[in-house]
Length: 127
Image (cartoon, rainbow, N blue to C red; front, side, top):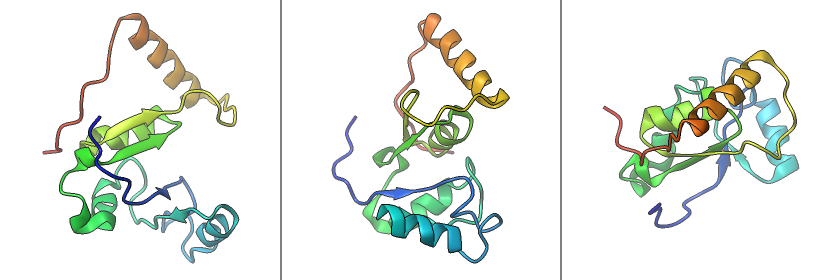
């Protein structure tokens, strides 16, 4: 992976940060105060906010392939990275356990792909 430098660390999360779920930004502000990590405010929910991530970096990033999205969900975090042409780093273990149906589907899919020898390709710019 050839990511030249860390230009910034910020967190994009499901509710705080998304304008429709946290319209006044209070939850995002609270998270920033408690963690010291910037929450990127965005209008479009994951996995569709790739353009807002690129706008956040502006001219400091010339290609989405210079960005790594780190997350614990295949269908949002990894899908977002894939859609925008960025690297995806999936945190499979070490997060708060989630036994929901979608999470169980994600783990089942990942096990099936791994058993079949699938390896993720290098990112390519989105169309």
